[in-house]
Image (cartoon, rainbow, N blue to C red; front, top):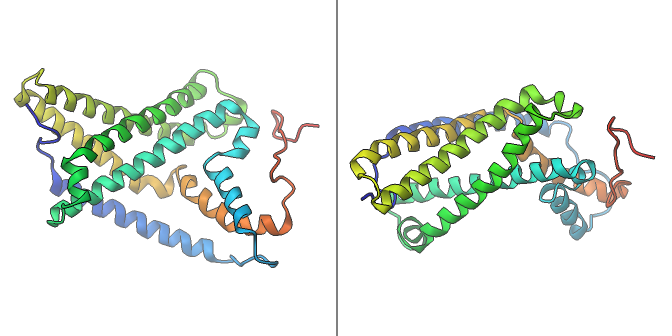
Length: 260
């Protein structure tokens, strides 16, 4: 039997790829941030009501309020993809941190509990649950592109589809890895036969995730980072000028113009 995650993993390859991917991401975001900062200035006016600013931020980022006003189906799809993706990114970052602590001989206390104790089951449940949430958004998103594509989606189809397919690939390889791990842990199949497959799947899934990290600055996923930043920067201005659309959003027709 293979207990837990006790199968060979190419950690040197993973850490080298992680250093390259994170280094490239940091450099690309730093260049973009320098460009974004040009022309940024605090809007004139009194200090904003922080509660109202926080309400704008939460409603726009976490609840996707404006998209809900456009289409409930698109809102549900986008929300599943956004929440699933962000939750799995947080889980991946936590895993990398825990493994780095263990490699440095600091895997004690909470780190040991998450890696080998009761917290490990919580991490698995978290990953499986949000993997299902992400999958629930990706499959209908692809169906809308290939089966019943709306005119508004036709414009972004070419740039969106490869990214959605890649996210689907990562999601499915993650579920395949988890399923094979559970099969190995149950003793239903010889460990010697499953070990190489587990290693191969882990490598494909891990390096695929790092490829997504490096691709992030050039992908449509950048809006997952930009939206919270832009909303936070604009919240004060929206409060100061009492934006007309907040808290109501005008219903838009098929052409994108406000309905009468």
